Structures are given as C-alpha cells and as structure tokens.
Length: 146
Image 1 (tube, rainbow, N blue to C red):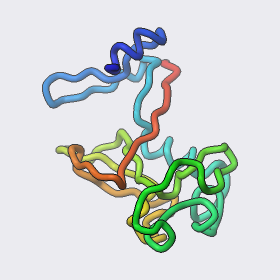
Image 2 (cartoon, one colour):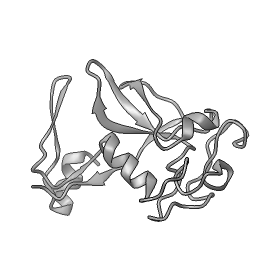
Image 3 (cartoon, rainbow, N blue to C red):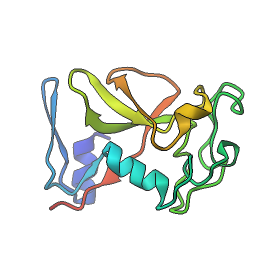
C-alpha cells in the first residue's frame, strides 16, 4: 500500500511530497515520517545517560558484530530502553530525515555488523540514500502537525 493510501485510509495528511528526485517535508502535516537525528537520539536516550539505548552494556540491549553471529535478529530479543523502545542501539541502523545534501541521509544506532563503538546513541553516519542491505532499516514517527 502506498504512503498516500495509508495516510488517506487513516485520515492523516502525507508529510512528504516528491517531485522527481526531490522530496520535501511539510512540517504542518500530521502523517508518518522518518525522525530527525535529534528526535531519534532523544528517543534512544530515554532521558538517561547510558552509552547505549537503555544500558552501558551493549549485550543487554543490542546486537553487534561481537554477539550477533553475523546476522540480524528478530525485534525485541534484547531489553528495551526506559521508553519501551527496542533495538535502538544496533541490530539495524535506522534512516533519519537529516541530510548533508546530495544523495545521502544520516543513519543512527549501528547494526549487527558494527563494532560496539558504532552502536553508541550519539553515533550517526552518512549513508547513500539508495543504499540497501540487511543492516539498514527505519523507524517511523507520526507528526502532530503545527
């Protein structure tokens, strides 16, 4: 089902408009979208000061190169953070809206193929927007509109 049909069915206004290869964000819309890096980090931190989302021990909350068996895992197999969010520090890195221009966006959270340092809450990296792989995913948020 397309983004427009999902939004229409649920009664939400689509957030993104696409014109060729250009995508714009209507900040007044109340539909689903990617979080910004700042929003993603706020959710991952959960108001706490842990190195990873929910713990200073990555083995408690996430999958990385050292404990993943070199593959992604089903969601919610490790402990959540205080907001009840799972897998914010690894398993798959998550796309965010923020861009440095060109064809790239930030991803946050690290993934199953990353070492622990790449899974820290404050770590983000630029990825090519059309890149694919089983180490990348996304988490959607819903705008409330302005």
